[in-house]
Image (cartoon, rainbow over all chains, first blue to last red):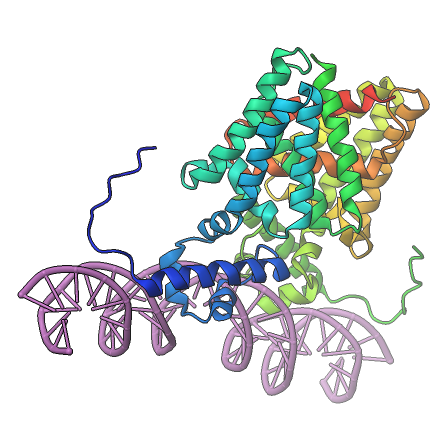
Length: 196
Length: 196
DNA sequence: TGTTATACGGAGGATGCCTCCGTTTATCAA
DNA sequence: TTGATAAACGGAGGCATCCTCCGTATAACA
């Protein structure tokens, strides 16, 4: 967590910063059009840089995802704070999960980023993961304290479950899946309440 | 659905039948070891046939999956019949879903086959899809008739939801995920009951 | 046993992943 | 301004698939 007092060496090169930006923009566009599995060479091409440059900035596909969707994760994180402050526990939890679904539905590729954040590789790409876990954790703890949901289910488990639901529909390409998933998330939250 | 009265031309060549069998066996082994994304060329190699032969018998990866895991799907289908005849509605539904989870957990690659069966490409690879839908449909209809579960959720939706849950954990590689998923499926079923 | 429909096999074109390293360039100090 | 040099660039190239195509081999049938 410590923000290493970096070597005060040189300041970063201007072309490096510019290319990083170009890559992020291109990646957003390419993933948006072609899904999270789109070719990284296509991203580099779209950014107008060499493939080597892409890999230098983002050593893995996952790293690129995390960077591209960082902003959206922050939105969700902020939303959790707001909801926790203004809305009854169970309702807050429900709304936040629905918002997560919404975001994943809107931004193609976002789902992959969220799955990353909820899944195993958490140690490697920690930032988004931390934010999401913290957000979910707050809401779950609050609902639990209010006795609104069962206690034998961690925030992490809940989050991954919901993302799993989304993923199943997302990948199926069923038109209008959003409404269905909304309903399923409600069922799931009902289930969490049932065992309280 | 009509089983085309095939042209009474020749009988199929013996080598063709044999190779098909070899491919299925090899595929089972290779998918089991390497997961559902394993190389098809590896399968052909393991079967001792050319890659062209593999593609002639199974034009897509999905077709191969469906063929490999057909037997397992039939088991699930049979189980549904048994449970429907011997167990109270809600309990039967719950047990069948858990059995599905179990199977997906045991046989690597099975999950991919089930997802296929539950997902969009149903028209193309209909057999497994039909069996699964029928099995789930029976149990859901029965539970619904008994007033044990809410009515605004189709069997298909339920099945896909559960497979989504499994998939999220399966892909994360968390050790011991089976127990967690079992618990989550229970939560989900509780949720279905809650809205009855 | 000859004819022929069928099936076989693998070369080959295409795409994508990722690494490596010779070349270019932005920064900084003189 | 002008080197010197650390840092970044780019893309060729090795490897792994995917899938198609078509010349060759062979099982079925008469």
